[in-house]
Image (tube, rainbow, N blue to C red):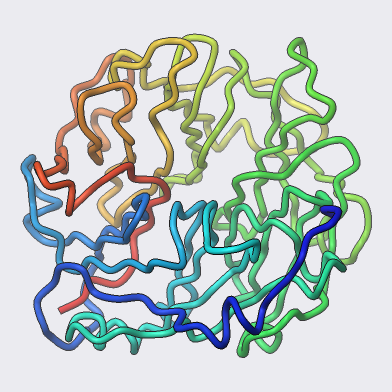
Length: 364
């Protein structure tokens, strides 16, 4: 729990106009279409679809919206209703919320109307309930929201009945972490929760790990005890993880050699205990112009066609961009040239310091 931390929920979040406003878009009503690529940028969110995802260029986003109260998104996820849930790294005052933007409100944003979050989940005073600093979020197969929190540290579960309105619900399940800080989280197709586990205290001679929590491993509150621990090679520090349609695990982040992406085959992710598999595929740091000690990669996600998309905040290159790699490229890895690049425009209004990315609804 953070000491001397004041919570001013009524004045900061409720009485004030906590709004998301359209920055750049065309008015239309949203309807569910194949897929849109949603990008959480430093100061705003953008959604790309159609031709923007088919060829390299400098596309205009289909929707761009932002807020003066919220910035630097850490994580985002879509629920079963296509509502967008977000955590932030920098917001007004000291509140660290998880918030929901309703799918229905995207129509208002596209019509240039400001909207308020549908739900705000925040800490109750200084109690640490349900969390203190939410880092990463993901939904399980039942629609329950899981949140990793760096202060505590812990991983918590909130059911749909607890997240249907704003407040500070007590988690249904709390997994306490005694010797690591949980960071990025993601569910695989078998409803296993995977957690990037940063050891505490840090020991440079020990590998960072990914923990796999089967449903039985997280059925009740208690110590966080994954049934499988994967030791990451080369001091890999994943910023995000994702699974392809074959169940292979992909991790993007910094390593001894620079920012790279490692793939661990599904066949190596079975069983229990502690394992140290070698990556089946590695996308080399040279792909991103990365050198040791320089961070540039952040979010990753797969589209329905099996293409891997990667947000590149531009630290390693001259501009921010989002890179796309085809399944044939992913099968070999190495020093790759992205098949498609969403490039930043000169005004930085379509992409700027992109962080988390997720595929969600394509709005029309």
